[in-house]
Amino acid sequence: QVQLVESGGGLVQAGGSLRLSCAASGIIFRLSAMTWYRQAPGKQRELVATISSGGSTNYADSLKGRFTISRDNAKNTVYLQMNSLKPEDTAVYYCHTNPYASARNYWGQGTQVTVSS
Image (cartoon, rainbow, N blue to C red; front, side, top):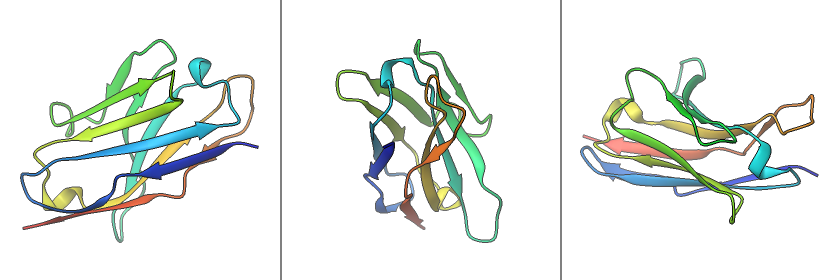
């Protein structure tokens, strides 16, 4: 059974920081790429950042420099460090993986991030 459990969301003022966590189970974590997406009210879900099994990262152009994705294979956890938050960052943030040796995609439950002005 594959499970992605997210935490770390909440309410923060503009300019503040949050760190999201996604704990994975039921997959060979060290061999699996992990991705963060987000979805704001009334908008399409969009890619935030991805990290490969080897640690290579990629970001949405508008977020590069403010957001950092990382992973801890010993904890089977992927993180999203969010700095200099803006009200436009308000969204539900989702963890995603296509596990190694799997043809399926899996999503976390989502965690709400609200940035006030």
